Structure formats: structure tokens, C-alpha cells
Amino acid sequence: MATDYDAPRKNDDDSGEDSIEELKGRRNEASTPSVDEDEAEAADSYELPGADLSDEQLSVRVLPRQSDEFTCASCFLVKHRSQIDHVEGKLVYCKECSA
Image 1: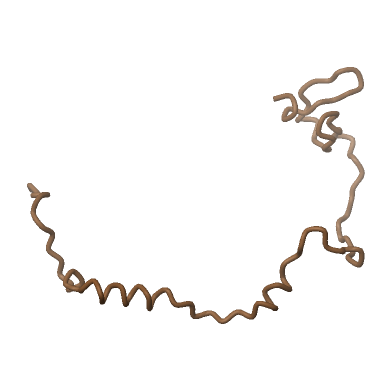
Image 2 (image 1 turned 90 degrees about the vertical axis):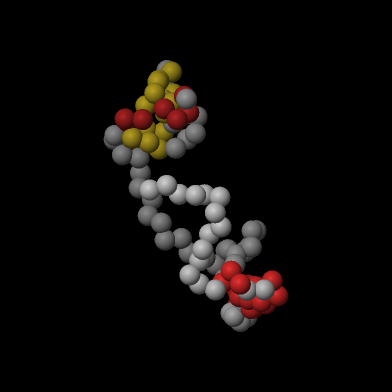
């Protein structure tokens, strides 16, 4: 079926007949915020850089390097042996640092 793309579009709803003032009014009504947020409560949830964290406790369990892992001589990350790219003497480098 052929379509005439130059012909004006026909809509079933009457939204095309709204005046510009009505549309501006709707836009202003839709943009009014409906959430009342206490600024003090919101500020309590943010942590500032350089904050005093001396009373905080760490809950991370640190494991020693396993027998199938190595420490990269460039990035100093502990990685699995499958990530070894090359060895220079006693220094082992990972694939990411060699790329």
C-alpha cells in the first residue's frame, strides 16, 4: 500500500488543538517538585573526603597469597598464575601491565 508522506497527519485525539498557553501551563505543573526532603538528613548520608574515620572498624578478611597466585612487579596486585605474561629474573609481570 502506498503512503503519501507529504500529507498532514491525522490524530484521533484532540491534543493537536491545544493552545500554546495550555501547553506551557501543563509543563509548569509537571515540573513542580512533589518531594519534601530535609537537607540536614540528606547531608548526614554523604561522606566528605578527608573525614575522620579513626573510630571505624574494618570488616574485611585478608587472605595470604595462595600457591597458585603471584604478585605483579609493576602494579603490585595479587593475580592468578594464568595472568602471567613474562618473567624477568625474579620479577613476574601480569598481562595487563605488559599490554
